[in-house]
Amino acid sequence: MVSWNSTDADLLELAKRELIQIGLTRPADVVDGCVVRQRKAYPVYDDDYARHVAIIRTMNWNSITRIFTSSAATGCTNTTIRITR
Image (cartoon, rainbow, N blue to C red; front, side, top):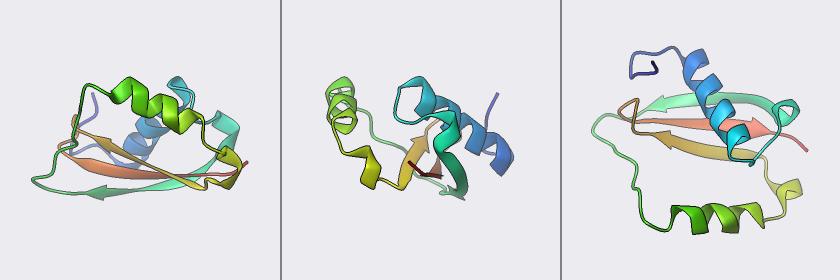
């Protein structure tokens, strides 16, 4: 289980796996990443999640070089994944 005390490598692997799972990148496109732990922070969830992801999928991915993710499970960590196309 991933938690606040997880290693940076484990958190980066989780972020990579989740981005691939929802179709926002491919494994070969991931270059590297970093983790920032933010105490007393929490990601915001809303009922329009699916619509927001659909909008992201319509973007020109050739111009995107970084994806920022946030995880409530880790209480809260922000993970930056750098990708290449």
